[in-house]
Length: 309
Image (tube, rainbow, N blue to C red; front, side):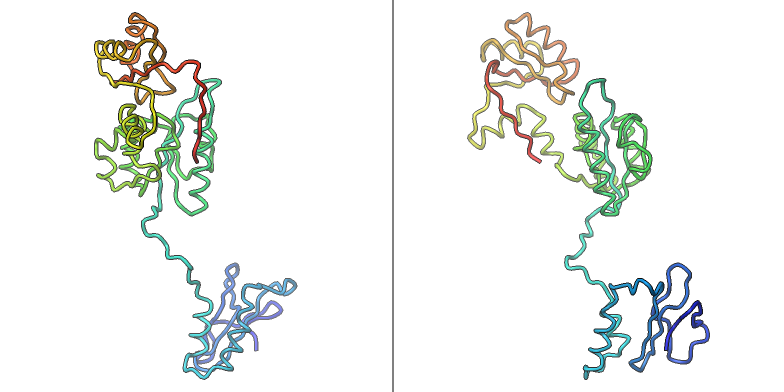
């Protein structure tokens, strides 16, 4: 008894009563198995025969022997269906989004490191492995992550809140990744969160939460958090005007380091040895950021940096 052999197959349209197909060839749609609904009869015939497979269905022999030895009322068809049904060991997480927006690395200068292009590319590959649709927004066509076939859809648009909101409105992603686009993506994400864009469109923040980004990018909040756990931090003050910067420098003592918050690559930051240098530096810094941090200069200190992944 066989469903097919030597190029001929039993037609499913002329099967006798109580017989039905068990397996169907995915390529030519021919019948590769038949089973009786009431009696413990079934047959399979897989091709090509020279491979003696597929081995993943060797369990059919076990099902047949179990049915012969069993005294339960469970029909052979039900027993076989139960055996062939895949039950995952871990329940699937319904909160995992099916579509994710990645804010890309943006423009790069000649000689500038491309680590965010690399990390963003790896993020896209990891999401694709989990069958998650990827939507990338990145205006730089000369990056790896914008290569054809990597992301499911690419938008060559500026990494600005207005444009990102347009993409979110159009694509309706279930989640967004902000940490693979560097400072530009982080700043953009913070602005979108303050405008309630993510909650408006039901877009979940994946990875580092927005609040954690704010706490690490706002120098004063970060210094306060470090003090809370009893760690030492350089004397500093957050200022919002040139006058406040000069007063803070007088209290801390020159030389000082002025750092602009939420700036790209330390833009507008530097060292000042006197009021004239600090005034010039503060004017440049406030052109890029509303907040300036005045730190005690740690020149000639030995620096140890950790990147935690």
